[in-house]
Length: 348
Ligand code: DOR
Ligand code: ZN
Image (cartoon, rainbow, N blue to C red; front, side, top):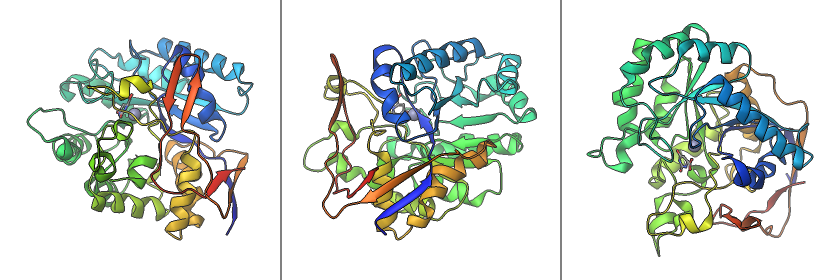
């Protein structure tokens, strides 16, 4: 197959940032995707319905600068803090202003300082969400300094997620950017109210890509890349068509100099090349017929939204395509994800 047309995909996990950076990256997503769940980890974070409304207007203004305001819809999230007001969350979700609430364990990742230290302190919010069918997106890593960074996802499942799901079985949860076989197996083993997003980098790369032959800061993200056996487990569930797994790029732009640094920022900026990489991967797995489920159908089904009405077409060429290496806007320079293999697909 040299050409495939699928329902326009959505990105169920993206970081747009704000200001000039947002204006730089927003079109990279809007070009291929119909909607995206926009993460709220700004400084200060997007905590209230009013914050989300204001941020959405800024994103829409940036889209309008690119003439893309009618082809792309940002879906907003709230950043869960220990001060979050349950009534504000429910009102935001019921009005449609907000699609989900994001739980960051305090200290887990970029701009997570306002996150949750003790889950008991947010139980009233989580209970209100469960009662009102509001999705909770979780950054599933424990932050205890004694826990090895490669074990933090597995420990989160055991120590936080499983107890939370026992306590509140009706709460609908998305485990964001799963990176391990533990994550894939756990989500696969549960019947309902649990799904997971998976990123392009965790589907294409393992930790050797980041660490062998020199440290590659543009592959550093959180959760960190894992062993090959984990990557394979993610590929299997992504390509299976299982409705509980869908694409969330976790595209997270940082300026080049802040990643190529003695203390580099976590985040991979991949929006520009994600769909080409996904077609390449699904072709290799003889699973091109599942590409649409993973990228365009499973996410809306879980969130209870219609699929997009338009389509995109991907075409395969004999020769590898030349992928952009940077997205540049004035002084801002963001390095684009390098999939570390030839890519023969492009979005037409
Ligand atoms: O690598 C990451 N970057 N992981 C996250 O969880 C946050 C993100 C960011 O905002 O830079
Ligand atoms: Zn993220």
